[in-house]
Image (cartoon, rainbow, N blue to C red):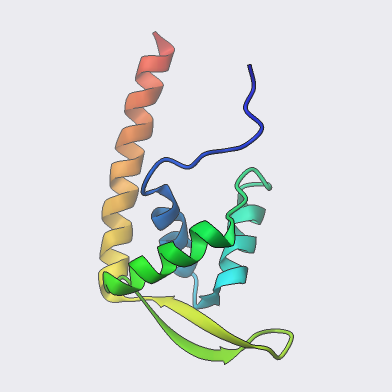
Length: 109
């Protein structure tokens, strides 16, 4: 039985957002578009998941935001990675790589 939708493991969205912002500041819609493109459209991040995650990451001090104009000249909130966010990204990436390796070992049996 195939699943039509891709459910993200808890915490994975945070990792994806932090990684996306590592390349520079971006507004929310842009973040979701980049994640979609990089995943070859396998991951479709909905606003109802994205914006609560962005607010949570900002409260944790891993990202910060300011207002600016988007590519189509609309007012938008732009997010950028903080130093603490860069450290968190390193930790989360290491954890994710260990997790994927462990799951792969189980699947090879």
